[in-house]
Length: 627
Image (cartoon, rainbow, N blue to C red):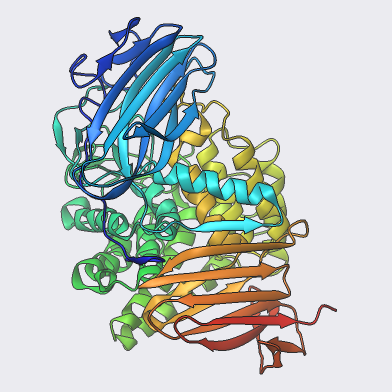
């Protein structure tokens, strides 16, 4: 991918010696009062320790083999302030972060350290006035894109900067040799392998990426320019969705993108599987295609996965309640769960999150078929989506609000009330038609998620901004973005995970919720189109994003409230920009001149749309009169 400053070249390979201290003191320089212990590892069996004292240091020098920019991360615990984590290049400071005053491990990162061939990068840990433990040092390639957000609201700019840097710190440098099958039962893993282009998507104390997490992180990864990582990860899941697995993709891979994560995979007929996941991966295949324009996503291998998921998978898993809706078994995650809500204790056969994901998969398959030139197939998938949605409203679901159907159990009984994922996925995927039922259910979700039904795990809450943005509930979406960010330093309920902000999904989704959510930025690189719609809440006057990667280049976008938008095209192609504004507006100007408008009903509301052609290197501004 090009960068704003020219063609992007990936960083040269670089490795830290003995990053988890499993080889004792090898590779590191140890000051007085420091060493290796087995007393408090993050993963594996050993960690570094530094006693309290101003001169206590552990350090390593890595010589750059070529040009590149890197993030340096480590898991650190401390007995108090003021410990430090420093990176120096040729003796000069390149970045420093204070060690958090936490007795349990959390992740610390020095971002975007630029190196040239022969540079000496020194990684230094210092204890200061309290003990410090260090483990699992990691080098990440700085993301190909460096998107930037500025705003009238300093909190939004701060939030995006934090999320961007945190998300990037989870990216693996291809070729890095690391452990396989690390988990809470097997902290040292079962061997090593060279890692493929990939990023963490799931628990940070496990050595792999998960289907559900990957699906929710794809958009954020694309905004960071992680196109190769998305191709590797989505491609690996597609390759595993074979007849022997009854067309389920495996639930988790190790970072070599070849080995199934052993804690979740025991045999071809006994592995974790949840019905929404294959459908979400189809949807995200189409989303990654729109962002990147990469033909990989419409080539035969990925298309076979999408086709099998939306055909054979549905047929094979529609036996207990035959109605065209894919089912779970009601017997737990290793036998096939109908819902992402693993902890409900309900024996679900059909669930709202799977139903909604199947609906979106049909729409995605229709778009992908059209991109392949298969217009008849595209029309059939579009018709299936329409019929599935019609059945949902006229056969599957009943009532509204708290009484609305959100699942069916093994006895065939409909279930209502709070179902977490099998509640909020239905409006998030726009399965619900606009109107009173949708409005009442969104109110119910907001009430339950903020009160008696509040999820204890932050990764579940990360779906709520998406849910409300999808339904033009901008104030509520922004409220939940702030909630996620405000609670990033809280302890995660899974102790080995550390703090909420160290769950990778948190950072990746805040990135995508800023660009796709608040800014309403929707790319279509294959057809050289972009659409935008400001979702700024009342208390944000303006926001600007630069270096948004689409296709072979970048875009910049600024919204002033919901009345004025400016788009800059830094790609090699002319793009058609559809600027959308909520409401029916008669006077619209493009670059100061009156412009022809279209009026469309989107999600049940009238929008004014303006189409503007922007050449390479061009900028356009569209605005409406504020009434």
